[in-house]
Image (cartoon, rainbow, N blue to C red; front, side, top):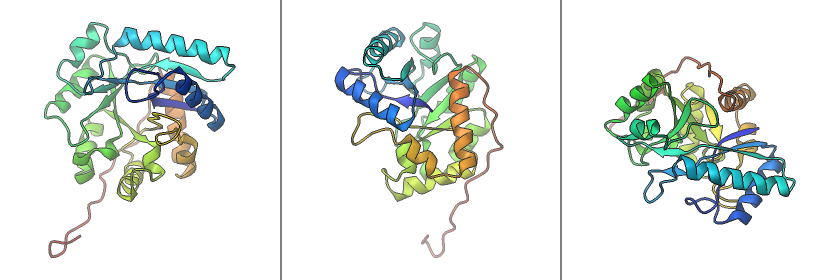
Length: 251
C-alpha cells in the first residue's frame, strides 16, 4: 500500500519527535502492509516552514536508517501546504514539493473555514500544471456545515483526501458520517493516514480500507499508486451531499 500523507520525519513539525520514533512508525506501517510513505511535513502552518531542500534532506536520512534497519518501507518527499497567497511564487522559487514525482500537491485549509482566495489559488495552480489535493476536508468546519463548498472545488478540478482516522471513528461520529458521505458522493479520491506517531495518531490505513466498500477501497489504493508514479487520476462524476431538511427549526 501507498500512504500519501504522513508526518513521519522527525523534528520538523508536530509529527515524530526523533529518529527513533520515525523508525517505530515505519515498523508499524510495514506491519499494516504499507510499503511506500510520502513524508508531508507542514508548510506555512503556524511556526512550521519546512521548505523543499530541508524535506528532501530529511527523507534521505530516514531512508538510510530504514535500509540499515532492514525495514521494507521507502519514504518519498512531499509537503502539507497550508493555503496562502504566495504559494505559486514559492513553488516557482523551488520552495514547494509535489507528492513524490507527481504534479499533485497536498493543500490544507484552516480547520475553521476556507480562505476567500482559495478558489482563485486552486485555479491558478492548475493553470501552472499542479493538481491540488485538498487534505482532510471532512475535518473542515465550513465543509461540514455545507459540503457543497467542497463539491464546487472538486467540480473545478481539485482532488481531495480523507484521513483514515476519520473513517475509523477517531474524530467522532459526525466526522465519520461525513467521510462516508463524501466517499459515496465521489467527492474524495484518496485515503491517507496523516500519521503523527504510533499511538494517538497512528496509521490505521488498512482498518479504514476494510471499513468501506471494497470497490471504493480498490479505487483509492490504485489512485495512491498512480499519483506516486506520476500518473493521471480518472475522476468519477461528483454529486451533491444530501442535506437534512429542517422542520420547525430542528433537524
